[in-house]
Length: 314
Image (tube, rainbow, N blue to C red; front, side, top):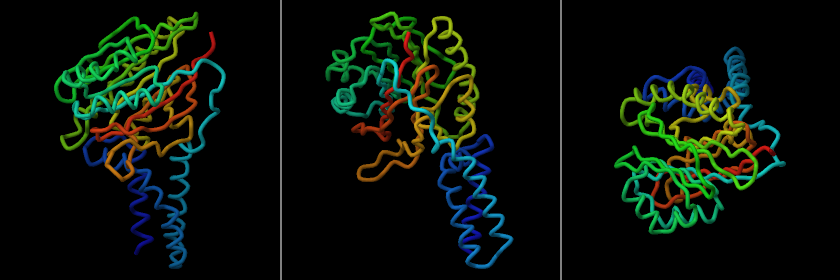
């Protein structure tokens, strides 16, 4: 019974992994599908011990499907070493409830050159300025709003081509970094996809459907300048969501995938307990991830993601 139950759970997880989610329930199942498909080999073992040969064979086939689905996130790719390093920190600040001093401390400890914050409220924007974020990273483009709509981008380097994007439920902002050499600065975009829960997932489905066109447009504009693209934000999606994997085309890569770090989990951030799923991401195009880790953001229900990427040499 345990083997059969595990096999059914693994089959559900594998189906959710491959098919686009359309409801809060299917988004949740696909978000946790990595845990579900991991039950496949255990199911096969239990069924073998129970001498249920046909069922064990089916569980073995499920195991092969699970390996094929998850292997890219473990295999990783060649880590970039040559080039100019740039460190990005992205974090959801929970409706502006994160502590400004804690955010600035995380920025300073990480040595971030670029900081991307989602759910930035006007009050937190003022508190961050008072706490010294603008002194550490003097260039910014921000859209602070009440609730979950606010977004902000801070940079150690001057910014150009600052743009607000209104295709998604919440505003997104982008800018091009002006580096202090002849190297083309990267275009940085920060965004926040609508949450699929506890409300209906309709806005999430629309946002994930619109994101490929937004990413494509940013990429085309960056190509004119020969610039890499860096994207950070709360996508409310994991590797298990088919719509998220659909974003990884035309040169876009997920930093966690490249580095073989699938368990870079960020949500929910609960004291003295590990986060369960990774819904905050750094995507790269034309740049190579070198390091990836998470950091605590006091007052937020998300952990922040710190990624060091290597920009190509001019």
